[in-house]
Length: 385
Image (cartoon, helix red, strand yellow):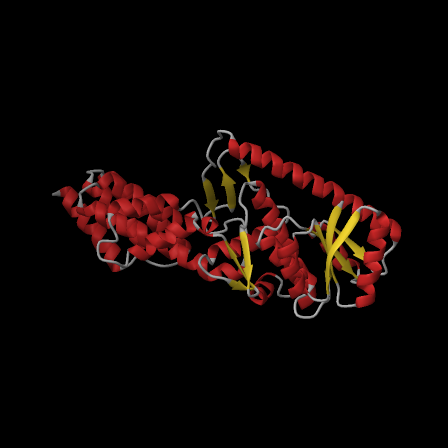
């Protein structure tokens, strides 16, 4: 027998649904209430197999109840009961186990009960398998890898890579990940990710994306991956650790005395596998992208300065070349290369670098600075000497 909780602010709707469920012979109603706040409390206490949630309820609607259930990883399945139009139903169908349109039809309710029975049986079977596995020797969970620099990827060693169902699911994850350590209010997410959508419709889309993200991360072994509290969302601490976060922290360390040592800088530069969200066009990320691009330039410049002081001209020129790849019109990068090649005794390379720079600057119809010209002339004199 399936246990169920019913939540609807209309008393006659509750009574009708309870009667119809009783007539199926498959469902025992163990709780009913008229608002979302009481629904959450009763679900936590009674732990029903399924909650039938009306969408529009006072205090907290059905969507918000489902959000909190997902955040707390309750085993309770959700069936939405709604009078919403079809655009919303298509989202609910992907997000909840099922949906029922008011007025409820008996045949449609029977199909929903069948889906609930199968889902509950599957959940109980998985719980038993997990319990058995927990008592046996097993390999520890693999390492989690979150990449935001270059392509956006989430993977767990031994479990594979997260496959995004929609572009908006990926964008939601990217937003939460790049704002690590912050809890983002629902309305901020709506404004940033769905700026042109009607408020209620955007809420449906957000709720659907959150549900996708929770389910997909759960498949990688991460429970409670997306947290929801006081209408604010955040990622679990384990997901906040990413290549981007490590890179930002390394960039911040440059401002501290002794923070710019070569070893730390080399680790930071190695993390940079490309522009933040390289293949995406997230307008809300413009500031983060600019800061990241400035940080990699500053790190490479500091590295070349350290290598020059150590007379390690090979690594100096390698870092200079990488800086030039990142910023092909950067005169400082050309000066670094000229000094590095001169220090290595490769004076022909000094000439080639100067010619390469001249061609680049000609594209912009500008002249090399006096600093660069004087450096080049000085290196030529040293060569002749």
